[in-house]
Length: 442
Image (tube, rainbow, N blue to C red; front, side, top):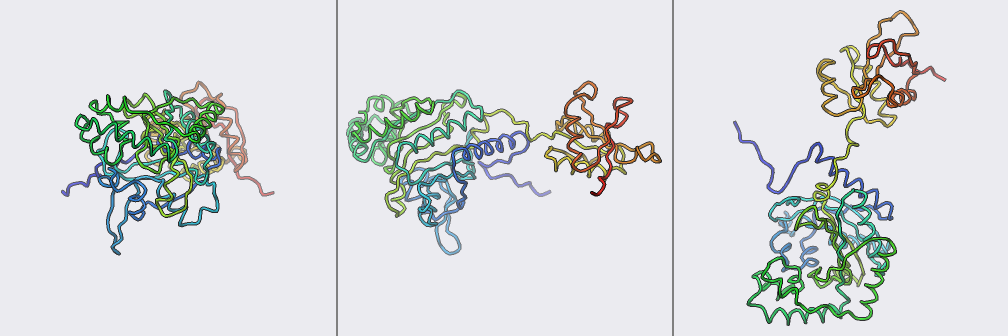
């Protein structure tokens, strides 16, 4: 017997509650992005490798160790996207999206990084992404942060803190970078191996090192001295968040290592995931589009992992069938299909049990969690015209009797497709609730 093929390490397949959680996060994201006026966009999963090498830096771990890159049959270097921002900025330039500036866009989908799989992190993972391109005003930062805060609130994720920092303008950041290099260089021998390498490449990243050898030097590092312009910008962001009732906490060690980041940097962090608690992260990247060969273009954005958010929410019940339609005899299959179609056209969530006898179908209805069963029964009075038609009974196993509003809702929904003759039950569970007759032509 041939050995079964296993999934690629770091990928996953979803079914049932896990798939429902995933879909619920995406649905909430789409709902909230519409409230904020963000256009839905789609960008390719594959991009020229240069898109990410230029924007993320040749020396970063993502580019040097984690990207899935390959030469296609034409010899061009192609990369599966490790994130969305660079591809959206490439499209902004090459697809003529500048005419929409300031451009507010949002998207979601898979991304790929070759890293060690861990809880909530995969090699094929999925992100939500929101960007505002072509707006250099602090109000853009505020709106993007309010979008993220409302999304987390609508998902019901508790215990979230917005951590906020400023990276200053170009002058502030360059002066700070020089001061950090001087500070850390005097302690180079005592730094971790990773931080020694970062000192020459991305010294700002030493500030958020988790290695205990680095913490004394990171904690004693000189603070950034903001220019008057950068101070005003950060003050406007904080004032805007206060006005929008978005709570935040200043996090002076929250940084972004690449030089194109400016001003606002932020993370939404939850206590529910321990040390790896970031669920949304982003910042202002006013220099990124220049890295792709475009003009200076201010921009700000964030990304969130769908898998991580899905781990934190309650199981949604909207995917569970509201009704299961069951024919109690094999010859009633066609009538059951008619009833199910009519209910679905009315907007009700319906499962049509199609395996086994009636008893087996009742068991399946219980297993799939449907609230009620619409049973299509045979008529015992074929010769009486008033009793001819499709007989149905609404069975609610969790209710006493048949007085629930759901029964009335089912019959009302069927009135759009049938003439519904409601009957008074003679014996609960045996006599029909209604007889469905073809509607007479007008």
